[in-house]
Image 1 (cartoon, rainbow, N blue to C red):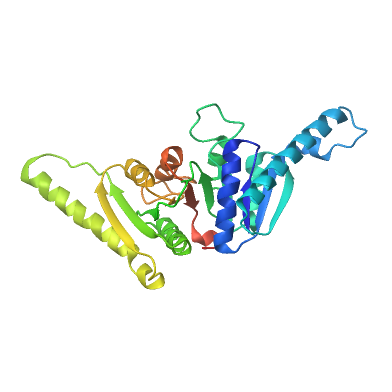
Image 2 (cartoon, one colour):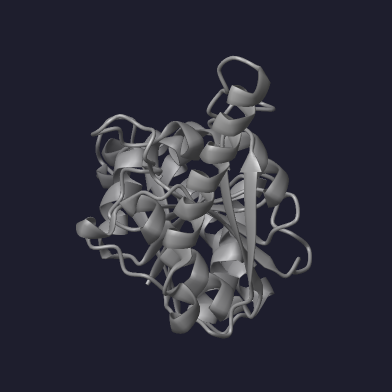
Length: 289
């Protein structure tokens, strides 16, 4: 099952459309959810300020109705249900995601400031769920023929790479495996050149070892390897401009132990030009497509 959170914003309706198409690819059911404060949701008709409670419930119901209309517009033929959830949207979605294979949210919603790159809900759930989280921003109007995966050689990066291969196979598109590093070269002259060449060879091994075995599992997926000296966020952002989907791990080898959301995943969530999926570690029970 795929869960998609809505809040009535245009961006959340784009997330619904993306989620319908994803559910169709996977043959999964879709659950459309909206969260509102528990007090008004559970308020009886004879309680003080009952009119306010009814008004808020009517607004929440209207939000779900608009989302279900978007589902029908997509005509994806997927099984769909809607649900009102009590509480803060972030905690409610994290709880709803426990039963999901994928959680989908818009990049920002009604609660964000105008022009804000990433909303509090999208940031609040990414890296906190047991399943991958898709943050939908600017879905391409037509397929660009490529899924991009950020590769860093970590175990979480391997989970993200597996997810990306599965997605590319489902979509019938190629996979671009991107590995970037920005370790500075100290000094100058021939020693600096030798150091840079040795670093590049080491990073090339990281990419080759990360990709080993995946071609046998997904022989239908054409892989393009991209090895680049540069900041990973900048390199992945540029690659996302030509992609249908960007997949990253929730944290990588350069992040502190215990960090929920790494610096690279946080950076691409803010700047990517296509929908992004943040994949948590598989030891937490993440089902791949």
